Length: 236
Image (cartoon, rainbow, N blue to C red; front, side, top):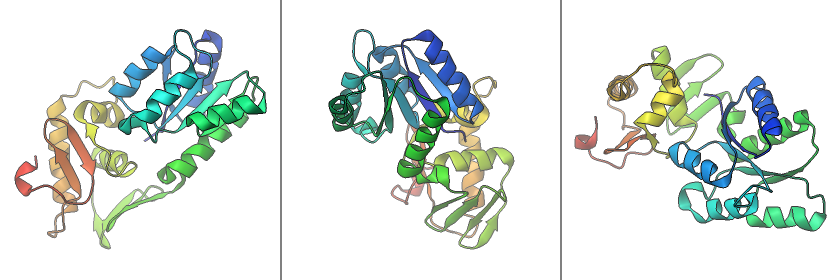
């Protein structure tokens, strides 16, 4: 799956420039023009990283960063601040607020994208690796192969994409709507029960030899890759 970047910038020309270049660099992009819109988008689908302008209307990017850091669901969300402030004390203030990096305007698009990749590699190692591992489950992204305890697991392309999405964020619960968007695509006319059916097939393939179930179902919410903690009766 492409890492999802939320760009929070009120200057329309810069917003479009960032979105265009991030998409060219292989990222998925969401766009917000103020803090309220950003919070709404984050609540709907947590991005992998936020590019956050310091000077926003109504509420500053600095205050939004503080709020995100105070909430458990977004306390560890990677954030890069964008600002025209060049004084060292401003940079330190931004970092002390909880930003993971700080880029001053004007900046090189190539440098910014390199900073984005560096933060993702540091905070989300899955994006830097061609092999995703959890417990005894291995996914080789280059060879497009999955194995469980050394046993090869045969998956359909959709099952592979679904498992990859879950493996890139172990423990994180994805709603059915989020998985529809991330795995099938927003433009596809697919029903929510398709997610449940694909999870059932994926679970059978991964647990074919009686292995512990690594797919956690959260009732009325969604799914996660996690260590077994729920009874079988809670499964789809």
